[in-house]
Each structure stands twice: as structure tokens, then as C-alpha cells.
Length: 182
Image 1 (tube, rainbow, N blue to C red):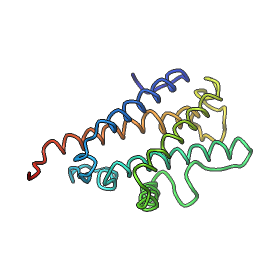
Image 2 (image 1 turned 30 degrees about the vertical axis):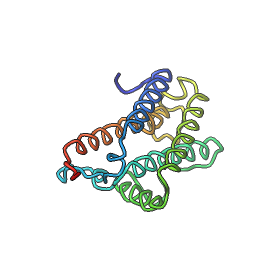
Image 3 (image 1 turned 60 degrees about the vertical axis):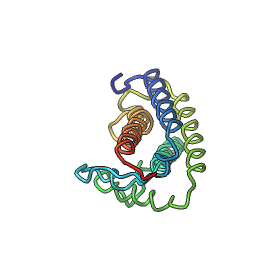
Image 4 (image 1 turned 90 degrees about the vertical axis):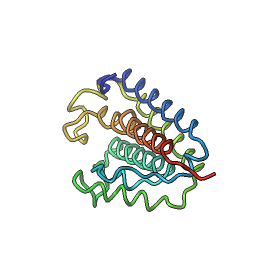
């Protein structure tokens, strides 16, 4: 399926990718859970070096859900709020991701799973409150900065879950290559 461009496609893709991600998580062995994430140093995106374990991936998704929920809630109440917090923009949001990573170094994996499950449900419930036109027609919400509201939902659900799936699959592949002493 390509990038969703309608409410039904958004809901379907978000739920399917979330369930696929959860299935991969459920399939992780103890060895895979205990092995720190380590990826090819040639990978350019900062997240390949930043995230060291499953918790880091889950809290990253959770924090982006919080951005979406807060942004929509604030703007729907008439508060003019940008999607990214004041000190960040689309050129330096990597620093924000580092902040999220540091913020959650004492969060347990179980807490991270619960937080993400709850925020996923909240995001999906919020998406359901909008019509297809409100989600995927440009200009409906001026505060969406010439994007559709659906673009933000897709980026923070289906696409972001796909990012996590790729990362978890890469970790599983790497773990299969590691020879552990008996």
C-alpha cells in the first residue's frame, strides 16, 4: 500500500503497521532484547546511532504521538501552536529527538510499551473524529502550514511504525549474525 491519502487508508495502514510492529516485538527473543542495538556506522540518519534498545524506539514513537496530540488539541482550542516545540524546527529536530532519548533513559521497557499503546489508541481515536475532507483536503486548517492534517497523522502513525519495523528487523538480522559463547 502506498502512502495513505484517505481516512480509511490512514486507519487501515496505521493499525496494520502498528500490529506488525507489535508482532515483531512479541517475537523478540531474550537474546535480541538484551543485545544493544548497533547498526552500520555508514547509515547517515542519526537515529541509527541514537537508539540503543527497544525502549528507545518505543519512547520515540510515544513522544511524537504527544507532539501530534498536543498540537491538534491546542490549535483546535484556538491556541496558535507550531507542531514542533519553540526551540526546534525541521532543520534541527534531531536535537529534539536526542532530548526525548535522554528524557527516557530511566523509563522501563514495560512502561514504554504501555505508554505507546495508550498514545496509539489516543491518536487513532482522535483521527476518527475528523472527516476524510478535514484530514486530506488542503487549507482546511491554516495551522497545518499548507499541509493536510492527514499528512501529520500518517507521518506519526503508519510511516513512523514502518520506520520502527525496519529498525527492529535490522536488529533481528544483526542478532542472527552475532555468535555468542556458550
